[in-house]
Image (cartoon, rainbow, N blue to C red):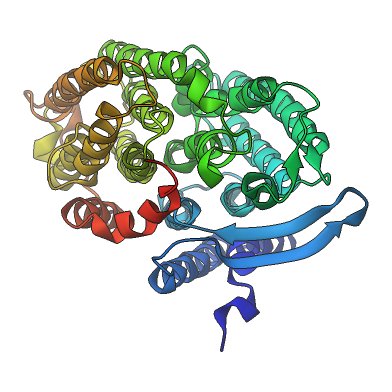
Amino acid sequence: MNIDSIHPLSIILFLPAVGAILLALFARRPRTVKLTAVIFTFIPFALSVALFVIFDRSGGLQFVEQAQWISSINATYHLGVDGLSLPMVILTTFLGLVAVFVSWKINLRTKEYFAWLLILETGILGVFMSLDLLLFFLFWEVELIPMYMLISIWGTPPPLGRKVYSATKFVIYTLFGSAFMLAGILALYYSASPHTFSMVDIASGTARLIPVIPLSSIFFLIFIAFAIKLPVFPLHTWLPDAHTDAPTAVSVMLAGVLLKMGAYGMIRLVAGFGGGGLVPGVAQHYTGIIAAFAVVSVLYGAAATMRQTDLKRLIAYSSVSHMGFILLGIFALKQLSLTGATLQMFSHGLITGLLFAMVGLVYDKTHQRQIPMLGGLARQMPVIAVVFSIAGLAALGLPTTIGFIAEFTVFVGSFGSSALPSAQTYVVLAVFGIVLGAGYILWMLERVFYRGPKEQFNGVKDADNMEKAYIFAFVALIMLFGVYPRLLLDVIGPVFHSFG
């Protein structure tokens, strides 16, 4: 049987939403709710792995589904994956499943919580699968509602947190960027002849572009939305607040895949897809200034991380730094740098997802996130200490972890870029962020786990069997792709053959 005939992408995309509807209508007992959430996140993950196994490594869009949606404006229900989007789909379904297990001890309005979590997964998956600009924008906006609800209801309450403030700030920032993106999408639609929302037709030239406004204006209208989501300095200030007040599972999803929506959009729409994005020839004119913002994000994020005393804010600011590497790789505009940027997207999702899961475990056991108040926890929770250390070392790019090969590929690809003026200078400055990263990661681990033990933490428990299962799964993937990155590189590489 031809797998395309069962519409695997639609099944993966909408199963979590179907699960959310079933939870809302029929589930009553908390255990039933949680088991249902497991089923409706495990099946999409298993299917995405199956698609990865049978994916044709020669490249191109695969498992494509297309149907008429709004015929009057030529908008279609158009899904497909290639070497750029398939790794993000797998990452999203994996983190969606992990998020359910991370949330196992949630007892406040359980049914609502897991329903919103499942809808969030569908919204993110839709962004990575959509090949129609209107459909892409629809899913981009869908994730706002569950994110707001999850943070504002289940986030850190006062006086320790400002959950409603943080949720509102996240929505305002995202909507601000979305307004510009919608204007850019409409400009692209009216610039295409014939008018179309098809990413494939615009990128391939099937729909000829006759710009109604300058292409550079369209570029920046769309780019600013992705720069906010990435986030790029100085548009990053929503991120530490959102992470600090979000429930652990939401922080895992936020760091793991929501930020990647920004990087993915940059590659798919304005830089890489089809040899130049949907606005061909524009990105090359702005590589220098965007790379400068990338380097500032790397160094500022690393410096700000060293000043943090809250574990969650520390990991949040480290994300600002590491996402700067991705931005640098994208706008070096070379095959190897774009491949490295995509690999770094996957790497950061795994590593930072694990880091936030570990912060959640430390807080769950000790009821404390302030680094000066912690200390000597390696004696009480050795498994958590070891796995947290592995995640930290992966984040600073230790060889044999995926963090090393991802950052190394970005640096090598960017260093030799002819599209980026003074590429070597940018790379050398960015590499200094690795040095700062080693400093804040090792200092944090030493203060939390390896100083003298404190009496108030005597008797705290280590990870239980369920917690060990999902954190060991993270470690296995981080090491697997670090030792054998070809598993991903063979899938990602062909997407960027049109670049030198």
